[in-house]
Image (cartoon, rainbow, N blue to C red; front, top):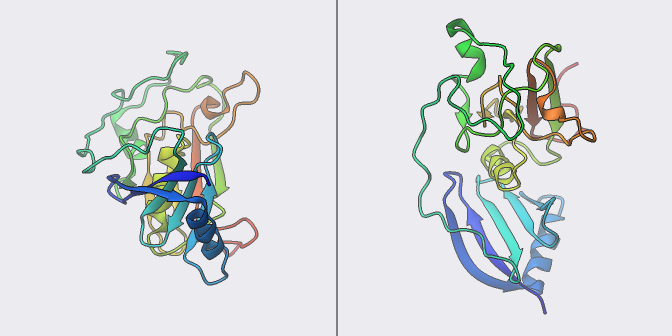
Length: 219
């Protein structure tokens, strides 16, 4: 019987390690998440076969990882809040330096005051083609919405290194932000050698909690 490390990623980014569980436990978790009235949603890790996350309505994220891999890192407390300013974010490898400058009057478009800050604020770097038109990309998370799913989905996106700029819950109206809008995010796949995350003056990526088959606007 296979065994899995079990951990909980809390909304404040702390991680509690819960020990190991067997295949039967994970099978039960999957079965419960498949029930129509469940508040849990199972999501596979896109880069680690066998690693599974469970989104929870209370904002926590359950994490199961095969025991033949390193256990999830224990984080006893959330990292200290960081203060960001334009130009202080880390530049990604291979990023060009021909960045269109942002002035003081643009500060409000870089960090949204009302948004919840998720992660350390460093998710990308300057854009590759800043002379090209700006873009905005919406995705659905294919997950439930409402409650504190915003925190659970944010934790998942951080753990798999697929953070957009923004994540929005249309049920509660809450918005979270992972990084500055004038730098790249990392929710898109590259198109061959073309780094789609860094295309345009900006490429603002927004994850919307919900499913594509269930419209979340009145349009």
